[in-house]
Image (cartoon, rainbow, N blue to C red):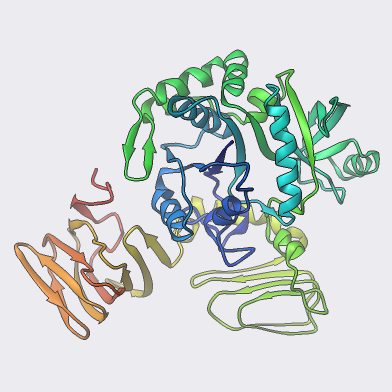
Length: 470
């Protein structure tokens, strides 16, 4: 059985922690590990092989580094040049799996879900595998514990002989509260988890039958598959022509082979800050979930998350406060679904807080914009051992570098020099330059930029070991 992990979401409902350049699947929100790492490490080892990851091309180094740091073996990281929803993403994974090995049973998972009971999850996977071996397209239906209006539902049909599964009677859109209450009382409806299992060949046959346009576009996109480091690149022009559609609409609602296995394993899609409050097991006596440096007085049933600074709250109930280095969210806990309106405004106004954190991660390390003003910007740059930034130049800014710790190998034009702690160097406007950490410990330096334009797009790359030269 091959796990297919879909890691292409943006997680905008968890802003300001989750942003376009660092979405929630790459964050540590429910444990000391990231959600992506937890998704893979909870898989039963006796049932599953090395996973295949599907992610946005912009997140490729994040994904590769998180798998590497957790010692997770994988069978490839497939890069989507553009987002086209779940049906095409799964089709590409299925086609690649058929190219490289025999007809695998695919376990399709989202990279950003929480599952508390791993044993119950493993049992459900084993039941689903039995059905997938019978050429069924299996979805997992979450046993509901409340009348939730934020999920789609699956209505169970007839029980399948010699199995704990059911035929799928119908898929239902998100209901209103009275309808959701009737679903809960009737015990025939389950939350749609967005997790699936089926043979690669069976899924592709049903997709070709019901959505040949998606099938053909995906087939064309992998015709010239490129291997690059850990990554598998598909053909951008062909994939861009693919219709945008979910697996539910494209296949599962049309096929006669759909069935469902119930799952009661503490599942949560962690779709909002209120979800993180609900799932937090370390609430205080007043029902408050606190992360970081927090002081409360007369506060009840609230979620407070501090990244850097002290947060003190007095006399408020049912609120969410989330602090990052460059933004603070304060919301009613019952209104956090409206956060998308704020994110849309940030995007429309082209504000950096929509896409980036103050600290931005790169394949070579990270940089943190610690100060800025008119015609200057100060960054703290961290370069991992043996890593190197691209050979580049800037049209509008000069830079000073001051080494704080470690060793820097600096090239400016045709000259290369080695700098150690408390030494500095100046890079003029227009000078071709490069920075490398030749040592075995992290290199930390302070970069002071000055000039008329300090945007990240004022970088002309000449060579780059991470394939970022256009």
